[in-house]
Length: 154
Image (cartoon, rainbow, N blue to C red; front, top):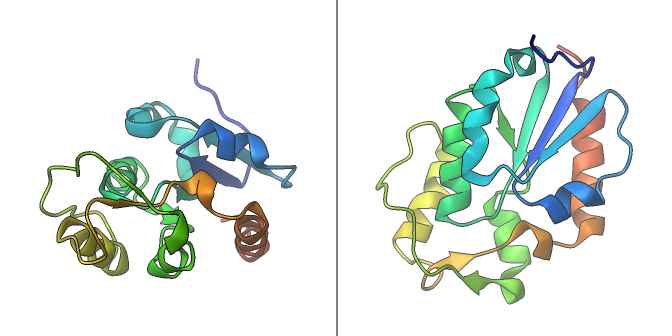
């Protein structure tokens, strides 16, 4: 038996705290806390009929998880994982002990790949990490709801 939910949008967030902050968005579901276990997306073919968005930490591991998730959902769009968000919350950066080992992640968009390369090359500092839960919820929710309104059912 396969699960098939009647939703048009799916928000996949790296951390449970972020997922719990979501309030009701019509025709939507939030998947949270998968981290590198995004391989579970392979067992949910119904996701292919929804608009899917991914929001993770802005660090080499968060981008690696996005890359892995795209192997199951090629049309997956990232949100709040851009240079603008990274720079806006520079004062909240932390350090990740180790970077992801891959030199390149082939399923990232050009912009995402540039951020990944800049992080790998320590352009902004040593092992920079912006955890998603450090981003202002007011700012994040404004972006999420605006994307939600612009993402009609396929």
